[in-house]
Every structure is written in structure tokens, then in C-alpha cells.
Image (cartoon, rainbow, N blue to C red; front, side, top):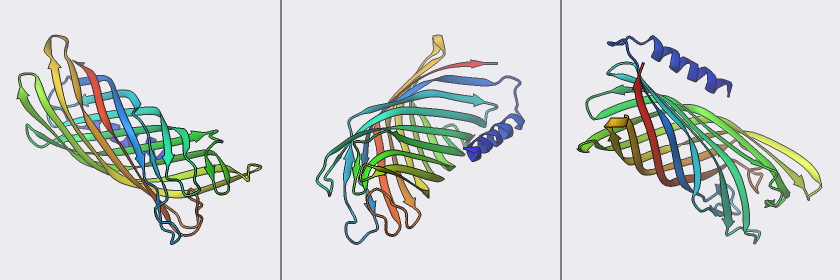
Length: 271
């Protein structure tokens, strides 16, 4: 988290010190919601069972604030914070159990955008993904029962965005980005349901985001409503000799994807 705060502060400082052609600053703020489905086909580098389960859920809602600060015609700073609780159902479990559990997820993006032309921008910034699962004593593993899982990861992101006018006040908006994060995961479980055991490891998350949407600008009230679809794919690599999920030998990794509908409403003004 310290690395995240340092990176955020640096980006904000660079943006504020950036020269501007005008004395006013354009600000756009509002809220966004992501109605996302979740799928996690765990995979691990073990000879006995390389593919051992498939986790899915119905649509859950991640929600939070969005903010954009435009300093001049070429540069603007964007911030998106998403948080939500997800319910998941694990199927095809090798020990013969179907498992229901829930977890909390935080997804944060801060990016500095540079305008290439009337249609395209490139952006670079910082991404944070947080994951927590508390007191899920019904989640069974070979050793016993999982008590909690915490994962935090932060790192750089890079991407391209496009805006194209379709009709008056209606625009197509697209974003494509990739990221690489450094983090740590901690897991606590009860050995045979009696003795508490804690394990932790370093991990790396890398993946991509794709967002496609239509935006409608309501000029009289300086408000934009956008509706679209977003997908996120993440692969997590774990250090060796870590008891990831069920197996403790060798390096481990898993993959996860979030996909669904996004809805955003923002209001623009100048100061």
C-alpha cells in the first residue's frame, strides 16, 4: 500500500506542475457501477492434477467514484475506484464438494492521459487490486477449513483509449490496457478443523482490461451517461513452496476473469 500511495502522489504532483495553456481546470466527477460475473478456472503446476476446479458466480456489483481532471488540451488525470462483495460457487472439485463462498474485491486505477489526436489517447499509471475473504469456515481444503485470505497487489499499467462521435452528443468509447502488479497473499486455515495455520507468499498479477461503451452527453446539465461492457483477465503467479489452494509442491498459478456491464454517470464543471 505504501508503494501505491507514493506512486499516486508522484502522478498527481507531475500533473499539477504540468504547464497549462489556460488558467481554468476542467473537472469531471461521478459514479460508476460494474455488474460483473466472475470465473476462476484454477490451474497449478503439479503433475498429479494440473487443472482442478472451476469457479463461477452470478452477476455481482462493483461500484465507486470516478474523477477526471483536465489540465490542458493534451493532458488529464483520471481516477477510478471500484469495490464490491462477490458470491462465488466452486464446481468440479476434486474432493467431491461444491463450495459456496464470498469475497470482497477492490480495483483502483490512477492514470495520466496524453492526447494523440481528436480520437486517441495513451495513458500510463498505477493499478491496485485488493482481495479479502474473511471467516469463510465452510470453504474446505485438504488440510482443513480456510479461515481467511488476503491479497494486495500494486504496479504499473499502460493503455490506449479512443473516442469517436457517432451522432450529435453520442460517442463510442473504447479502452484497452495491460498491467503488471507485485503483491503478497496471506491465508489462514484450521488444520483438521482444530489448529490454526498461517501461510503467506509473494505473488505477481498481470493481465488486461477491455472496455467498450456508448456515451450520451446531456448538454443542458453538463452530464454524461455511458453504458457498455468491460472484461478483465488476470493471471496470478505464486512463489514456489507455497501452499496455494490444495497443493504445496512447486510453483503455482491461477487465472481469473471478470466480465459484465458498466454504467457510469458524470458531471463536468470548470474551476
